[in-house]
Figure (tube, rainbow, N blue to C red):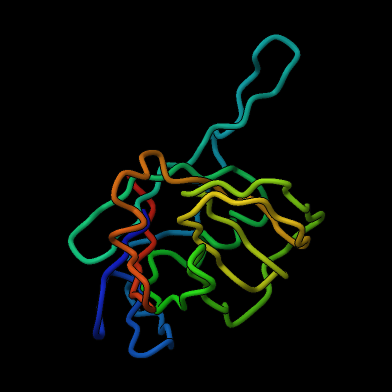
Length: 170
């Protein structure tokens, strides 16, 4: 579940943040057990299909349902959720947050087009939420997922830095 919350310190089960520091809370309701890996793949003939992981991103009082890809980089991020972070504005296109440690990334890509609503990891340690679609020439991205309905995303994120909460949906 991803949840974005604007302004001030926030506490959700698992993480508390003030400024741009995220602190895990003891007694988190999230478990690193097999809940994300069990039954996440199914056979469709001879093609293995990955099950998407439901999440939500909350900014202020606006909740954006999201889908995350079931891959190693995403699994590493999921182990940190729920988390509330202060994301920094960049170039009228994206919000980003530098993670305290690198996420594993076996390969990266240079997407020709980045779409509004995409959630990516850049340079192994930067969580990026895009709110505008644009042509891209930068590499080092790992696609983590996307917001299902981007209606109001740009307006909700605004032009300044913003507090965002990421959570897994049950």
